[in-house]
Image 1 (cartoon, rainbow, N blue to C red):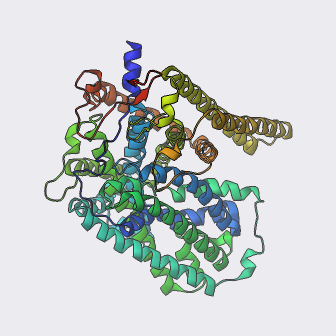
Image 2: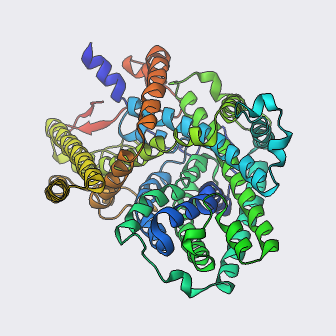
Image 3: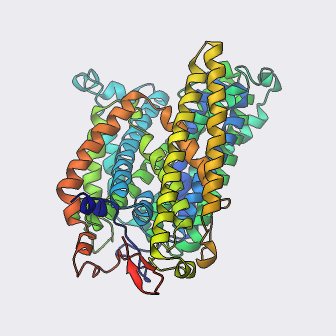
Length: 572
């Protein structure tokens, strides 16, 4: 029985030859995907987070923190790009994990990404209302009935969500038109702020370039990393892209580079305009322009912040229903959520359900409470996608299509299994050592005891050597199948670059608060009830346990290898 359960938990999807087939509307151009990615990424990270990091951590060296964070983010984006150009399906990290790791871990990723999108939308809406209050002398707050404001309830946040939900229900093309307008407005304001910063620049504000030492650059980079979270909306929207094989990797690369330029440029402008001690945590650019007497420019910066947050909110509302649609189409959550409108070709039921949840969170919870829920799902997704790239490249068959590679014909089936188990074991040990290394780094940062500090440094050095050895060993025992697969984008330096990405995401996960981990446990407990009560029996792959299990239209679970006699064998 345990072997049967394990087989169900690790069963994998594969795509058939017609991977472009979809019920959704394929109408998005490369330009549309780029603006969706920029809109989903550039929001509170530029208008709020930049000010907080500069004021509290880095000072004028803020742009260096964004540059370090960009390098770390680019590694994860590269992993997404390799999958995105080969898997033109909605679901992003969920579907990629389903193809490479298995159904259970795919459910874990998908279930957490759902909450990330819902909570993210609610948090952005609360922040947007707060920003409107800040520039309107608390107009909305004063108009709120005391019975609601006394409990910190917000009746205006759900209204904003419902308005954008209506836009989303009109269709992806209409949603993208609104998104493109808001994104272009956001970019224009950002460039305006950069020009203003250069005009108002005072080099004296950089007199103390590293007020908290060089280590503050990396401390700030750990926080700035979250400003790059959001580009995965491109891969979620890939099922509606006209040419996903080219558009997805190109859009991902362009967004990461452009957003890096934008963040670094506005960081330089901000820290040159005003002493870092006087930078506002809530409205950095507006207050900096006001500090220099440019009140008229302050209003333009505020308009840009509102446009950026609205764009991020719209991005969450576009992608969340598509994540629900992907999971429901596979049967691991309620299949009624996969219903598509015949007129707009939008997952209407998923959009309505997601909107209701967003409204509830935005109405009852404050921004601070919502912020505590964020990040863990995205970081876990980035972690698993980096591991999945290694598994994809070192497997003896194409995990995307299930087809055998020529090299597998020369290796007996039992030998292939032993090699795969050895690879999995090495990756598990690598993840465990990366976790211990991250914990040692945390102890070293927190302790005031010199002996404890240097002991942590010794262990960090030993663990880093072990991780490098494991990656070298994995590379030595494995054969990269890249020569057998045509792909527009490939991650270089496998397994080393994905390995660094794994470590970075594990380290950032250890930085999260205990409340976030408690939320993760509670949310996953609810998800496990749904999966084991419904999903495991109603999965579209459940039929694979019987003779007729491979008749689904776009899904095939047969992962064939060739044994020494040349006979094809299914071993999943």
